[in-house]
Image 1: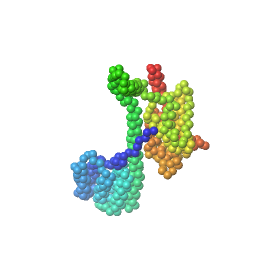
Image 2 (image 1 turned 120 degrees about the horizontal axis):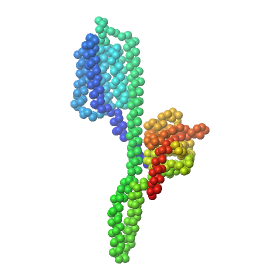
Image 3 (image 1 turned 90 degrees about the horizontal axis):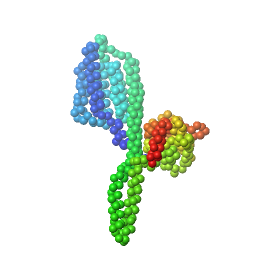
Image 4 (image 1 turned 90 degrees about the vertical axis):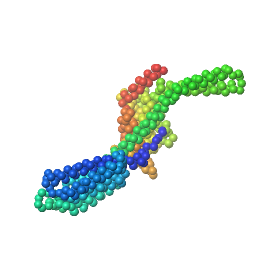
Length: 446
């Protein structure tokens, strides 16, 4: 089986943790607008006294920073994690300055401390998020004990009990930890899924490219037919014109080789008329193609066919199906003790292919996660400890390709006292009916 490198390039992985500068600029404009409206509303609509000049000075600093960044960098510019961390840290400090002027942690808008940390958790490495989280908690701690009074209409400043302020601080700490970890995990799963799907598309495209070579060969045969016919005619005329001599054998050899080339091209030309050789496979031939690359690894293969031979299914050669089943068979060989069993069962409703080994089976802790990208517990020192080892991106690709072909995958372990993993792919019988009809038409035409 031909394998391809599936790991994304290192620079692509780095790009996944890069924020667009335009994104941060737009979010900061949104924050500037919200802060301006809040300050004006509190002072004008509610009549609360505020240090307006100082508040708008800090808001203007953010606006100035946005203008400088927009003029300095193009819209498509991407920030490295340290640069993005620095800009988000500025947003934390700017918000802390506004909160210092308007009541500190007693101000209900202190919840906005979560925003920069959430942005970092969804788009930047965990280390960056941890740094911003520590900065937020440091600012929150200082604001809890040092700040200007909360704006209020009463003659005397409104002072919240210390226990209440401590509760707000604790709630912010818990929210940072829980929501930050949750946001990071969701974003990381999305990135892993995106990488895995990209690798799946790469494998499928390469497999389909190999399958398309027969069509290119047929086209080349059509193009080469005319010059070969000319060579054959000229060689025949030369053989007639030259008297028997030292070149007669060479001319005869030339004609034989030309005839051989024409026979080869004739076979290639037939590819686009009746399909490639073995383009439609019986179940036994399909199983043999799956098993053949793994016969020399010290594991015995058992093949069983169950069903009425009169309605035996035939499967059109499909690179994605061959790759998917081959990958599952390879995993079975890796963890089998002595044998791997391949069984095909068919009836009027469905066709099922089962691949089972006599190894330790799927580990319970990963049974519910099998088929997700990058789920693997394989170690270099003890490869065969658990069947789950090695079921990472390759198994995800196999599952995806088989499901695209219409299969439903059922995974589990053999019933005691037997041991081993069992993977069953089940297709509706209708997926094979069209192939059988087309095959019969081709045979009648031939």
